[in-house]
Image 1 (cartoon, rainbow, N blue to C red):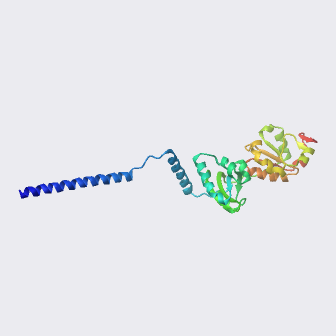
Image 2 (cartoon, helix red, strand yellow):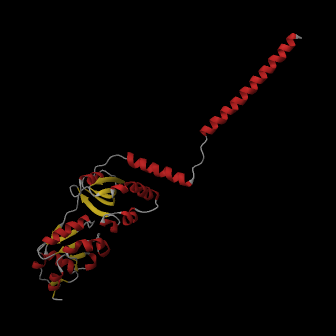
Length: 273
């Protein structure tokens, strides 16, 4: 009888231990499950993860060192507004707005009116901090730089190993062009209005070098950068300066008329108003 009581007591204790262990095990599994399980990301969180991934990829991208020229755009803000540049970068990465749209709205630089476009730049043309950022950022990427002007968000649009050169052409070469289809080329006269009134070549468009800042923002609307561009002035000096600017603005085939209007006496000459 005593032994039977001992056996009953042993079974009761064993059952209690088993029950307790089972409950603890279930609790442990439940806790582990809660720790492992992750909710499905919402659309907004997925976008945030994607943006973060893009930023990490941009940061860890292999360093570049463009040898020739880079085509850039930028958004310039005051140092106190630097956090805003990070927000603008996220909007661009998420496709909420384009770089050009945000530059037009937020940039303190006059280039903002042209979507922040600065055109092609070579080493030595900009301040050191801007140059270092622009020439070490992959094409299609963005980077920030702080200069004496403020804080820049820089977008590298393109790169080329060598800058195109200005081709000097003779008056005879120009006359052959004038005898062809003028719609196949750009013809730009960079003299002053009074010089134009005195004598000009038919089919040329007047764009005085002295007012280039005023008309250059509309240049690619008025002329096709893909066409050969002939630039003329009185003797070839001002036209050479204007041709260099056109190259930086993306005109790849720019030709300076040597000798200028002083050397021209062809049938396309128009004199007087």
